[in-house]
Amino acid sequence: GGALVMADRGVCLIDEFDKMNDQDRVSIHEAMEQQSISISKAGIVTSLQARCSVIAAANPVGGRYDSSRTFSDNVELTDPILSRFDILCVVKDTIDSVLDERLAKFVVGSHVRSHKDFDPETDDPTGLLSVTNMSDTHDDIEPIS
Image (cartoon, rainbow, N blue to C red):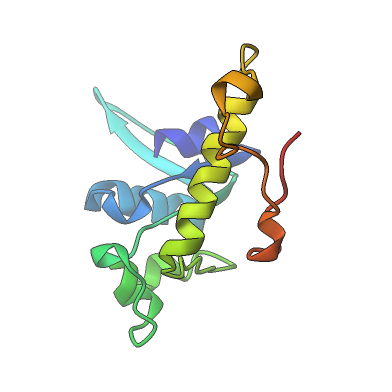
């Protein structure tokens, strides 16, 4: 809940939302519903403002999204907490070892080529790290120059 209070009038990004403990989920649910968090510490009872947008990411159970199951079953989150979100998006990784290898070479090559000491003649004589046209297989990947 503390992150939401810190993000008051802003945006709070939460990763591993599915791995949060129950107490934190209750706090976040209250904050998303009431836009405040109630606390009771050292004899002080108060409510702190948590008026923020929440963008959260959760991983599917077992590491792969199962289209035959509901969204809440895939991420093991309850319907009440999911109902607090305006938009739920699924990003699926299509298993394709050839594309995955090309993408990995592209990413590693981009990083290696961006190093100030990179010399294509000595560091990449075979051309394995050269920029390939990833758009042949993936429309939204463009080489970084």
